[in-house]
Amino acid sequence: MRRNDELAQWDRDHFMHPSTHLAQHARGEAMGRIIRTASGVHIEDRNGRRMLDAFAGLYCVNVGYGRTEIADAIAAQARELAYYHAYVGHGTEASITLARMVLERAPDHMSKVYFGLSGSDANETNIKLIWYYNNILGRPRKKKIISRWRGYHGSGLMTGSLTGLEVFHAKFDLPMDGVMHTTAPYYFRRDDVSQSEAQFVAQCAADLEEMIDREGADTIAAFWAEPLLGTGGIVPPPKGYWDAIQPILRRHDILLVADEVVTGFGRLGTMFGSEHYGMRPDLITIAKGLTSAYAPLSGSIVSDDVWKVLERGTDENGPLGHGWTYSAHPIGTAAGVANLELLDSLGLVDQAGAVGAYLNARMAEALADHPHVGEVRGDGMLCAVELVADRDPRTFFEPDRKMGATVVGHLAEQDVIARAMPGGDILGFAPPFCLSRDNVDEIVEKTVTAIAQAG
Ligand code: PLP
Image 1 (cartoon, helix red, strand yellow):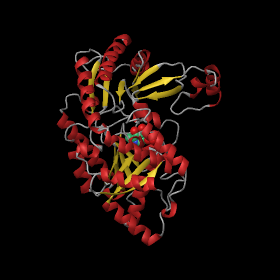
Image 2 (cartoon, rainbow, N blue to C red):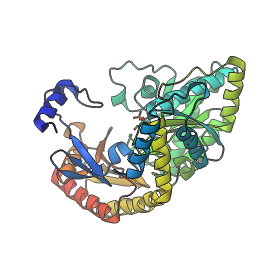
Image 3 (cartoon, helix red, strand yellow):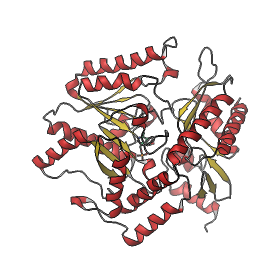
Image 4 (cartoon, rainbow, N blue to C red):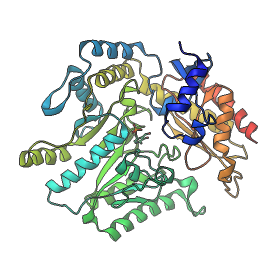
């Protein structure tokens, strides 16, 4: 085994990490952990330090770490057939079986799935499919996309533009033409604190309608949204939000894309977030929970109605000119099959719902009267604690104070990993679904301590 100091040096010298302060890392000031192994809800670094991962990696290791069933499926697939492509109709037992399993679990009106590698590329695929769809329908002007401030849809060129968090835009000159961001459904951070939840929802709907009228519905192809804002702060939609938004989209013939990269496959205690919140999407983006991150794999799911137009398009124009070398990779799809089987056999979706409810209730109870906690919110196995300088009147900490990151640091000192969500002092918790109630008690107790330490 290599020495830790040698690895750390190579890391500084050669490894350009994602979402990292590159200069600080290269100077050795922003070093992460070098992880060696993991099991259940715990990861272990090379010094033997064991930590409870209350963010499941990047909310993706849903079935928990160290599942030999998935590791064995990957190994068996690699031995039998590590790779063959899926172009011109080719497939493997794993890719065809997984397509079937995804559609069995997806909402009834969905029809087909296209496999990719990451949430970002699956969203890019959905953008291209929607543009293709409107071209086939003879509506070449209907191409703009509306997403929401605080939405997160990836780091690609178009998907980075759809993302409504400025930190992901800065200095990249992303192609923002044709992408518009509407009001984030984030009631706690509403501009007008006197608004009721119902008034705020009405405003979100009015803002959307006004944007559509201004731009012209004949220029707008799709509305892109996570069922619940994830990276933007773990914010469940205010009551009535989807009931207010969807009729507007239908009235203007605008497709609804549910980005279920976080919520797909059980995180809210239901198979899909769409069903959880009564959404009827035309396309769905999936990734993380599809394989619980045991291998990179994503998917773009299309409805029957969208499919019929795509089908017609290829009859008229020939094959769909869109593909990745690794689309429907045999190892990724083998991991996906084993992962979905495990979700079912262990009842992990129900567990995510039940233990997630316990996590949210315990966290809310423990921090109910805390002067620096403005809100505890969440749904299923997702929970956020929003820190404030003052509760009444609602006052946020100065960004320089980095309260969220400080509390997350104090949690790490106690061997619990949470995430400081971008765009505010928000602690995010998104543990693996196999979390126990004892784990919850530990997380909550240590969070209370960490907030106290931060002052
Ligand atoms: N969409 C959502 C809702 C996400 O949360 C993410 C990643 O966190 C993505 C898309 C992008 O996925 P990836 O990082 O796999 O490209």
